[in-house]
Length: 187
Image 1 (cartoon, rainbow, N blue to C red):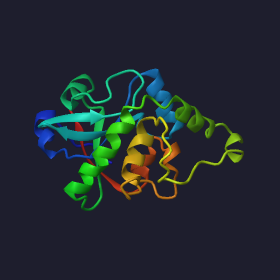
Image 2 (cartoon, rainbow, N blue to C red):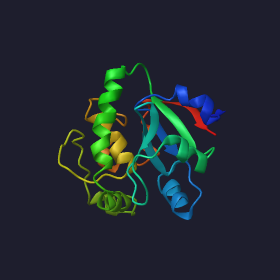
Image 3 (cartoon, rainbow, N blue to C red):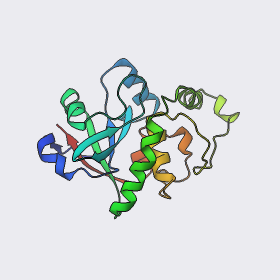
């Protein structure tokens, strides 16, 4: 994948509701997530347009879950890739995906979900555990970042990672699912 870097001022009008934002980190924690997930990415979020302002919807333990995207890009230039659902996602479907994501990011961070996902990386232990493959389960749980993104799409009948449980979706699984296209990197 060849990176296409665009300044936020040029890219802002190209970003749509429900576009997926994947982050490349620089912290030690981000490097561990990227290595464990065999991916360039350590965090995932979703774009949402509210009252003419572009926001980042994200499930995170340490910061605002709905900050302005311009603020996030100013602190992480060149580290955020914009991905979009392949094919045509009607505007009303994108709005529904965003509406589904909003309450999920307000539930708090999914430490339990993250711990369960980490256990799948322990050699031999994954044989003893079976992930919940029902992507449409409505049981309230606190998801971590990429779980929330995958579930918001699944609950609107769009499976971003076919044959993969939403409840263990890591940031790198989203582009590997084959249903997304890279658009550009925010500078």
